[in-house]
Image 1 (tube, rainbow, N blue to C red):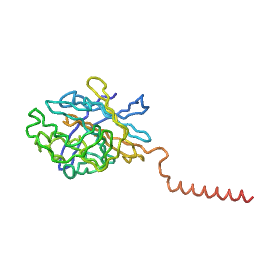
Image 2 (cartoon, one colour):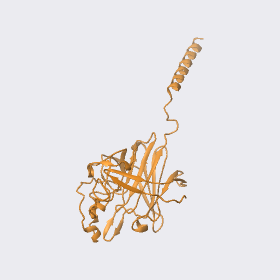
Image 3 (cartoon, helix red, strand yellow):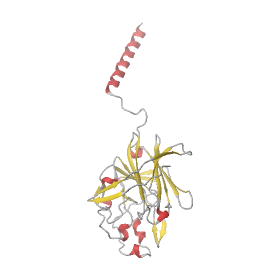
Image 4 (cartoon, rainbow, N blue to C red):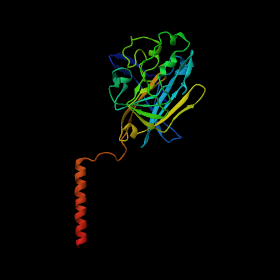
Length: 290
């Protein structure tokens, strides 16, 4: 395993989010599946709140049919109770052909991401405004708390959703702070957390697993069909994940290579093939005539 630190700078100007990373990746074989994963470690001890909210690493692999997601985090699937409020785990943001860092236009559930095709994979089932549960007993959550005012669509664990719009966590739920710049859902936390609206339900993609490794960490795995993402012929994509409180977040960018033998032949090659077939046809006619 390669140890390194990741530098993250978030600069918000207008509706553009600029991120600066220095994230080396490394490969690791999975003996159970036979797949080789590309991983990226998240910076250690960078989560506000400590190990309970830490993301340790994120990775991906793929075969001819599926794209596979893997992550190790201290956040359980059913969330954590913190000072009387439930902090939920988030959904998986997937951008095909673009980047979250290119920003968005519009606000709330009417927002549109500036680049790529955005999908959401529901890592839990939920419905309604997930930020409402932050009105807990602690003053940090109750003072200044406000409903985001948007109507959220229900989602089902393991399902993939096209044209997804993500809420951006609970900081807008308990802190009215516009000093960091624009956010489609208003105020502070600008990482994609929960699927709030979507264009289409693409159905189950093969399941989500949230397995406990030890007393402090969980391994999260999920499967997404390549053709559902339009990646059956190859292409670039981006994964993002964070928990509701935004105490830590991680991303990884990857590329699915085109399947072997799927390349389009050059015009010259096609012409030679045509002449070859014509010659074969003429030879066959001559042979039969004789």
